[in-house]
Image 1 (spheres, protein in one colour):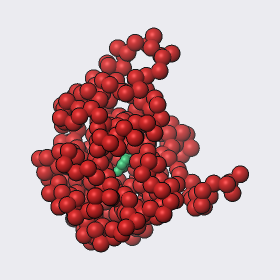
Image 2: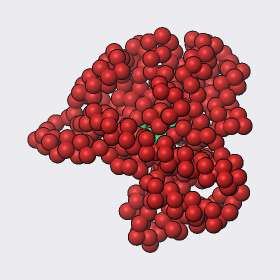
Image 3: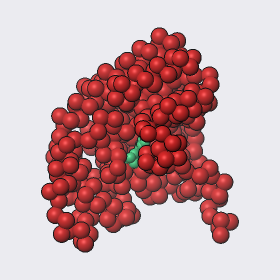
Length: 359
Ligand code: PMP
């Protein structure tokens, strides 16, 4: 059977999603595991989400959820002043990334993305038999927009712009992205993935959401998995040009958001105080990390996200040592580089101490 899959897919390295924490604890024989490998919100979830879920009418469990996610659609549309017709919801941004690839790409198309960046973009390009052109980040770890423009050819269909970029954490200001949009041919869709935008402190208004009414080839992605602390509920959304929205709405799975997910996201969105508090805490902890990395004279990127990215000659050995002590971090993105999510203050301190002793 495997011979019948699309070219290139049979040789893919299997996707290894993050193991459940309880499964990991059992496997590693540890009492406690702190996961700092998936950029989740280490500060939990708004307590208002729990209450909203408890108030849910369980009698509706046998009924399909609202296929339009109208409640969530309304509050996001009102908050950002975006027409409801331009919002598309997904089972996490993972689904939206797949949906955009599935809807836009045909074999032979080219996709431009940074190297390194979030792996799902490239995976879905491959699934659609498109070609990925990876433009290396510059020496500061920042996405090279001039390099992106130079890479555009008549076959280019899609550009993925992850801002802040995962895994480097580096950030591009809206003005830089707008200048870029002015140069990109209108036949190329530019998708700005703002999964980590709430953690940016460098700019008071770091998002390009407001540009979506002016650029017909701009899509902006947001998720509830990071600052909103709802990774388990799988809610992400895209702000897209209206004509594309109606196609995406037709192509997507009909009931991709459960009522539970919609209620949780609606309650989390309403509690901006929780988001402000946790993102402020993350910024303080991120600063401590960056100061530490500078003091240790390690090479690192200036993160504006909820993780730090740095270089250690024997990265795997450090990761193994941390794992034995119950701290999971991310390796394997680039040789010798590690990505560590910002945890709670004590967790961060312990990881820094283990790192210092390792060096
Ligand atoms: N985009 C980026 C840049 C990410 O890092 C992630 C998750 N790690 C996602 C999208 C997917 O997020 P989710 O499916 O949880 O919304």
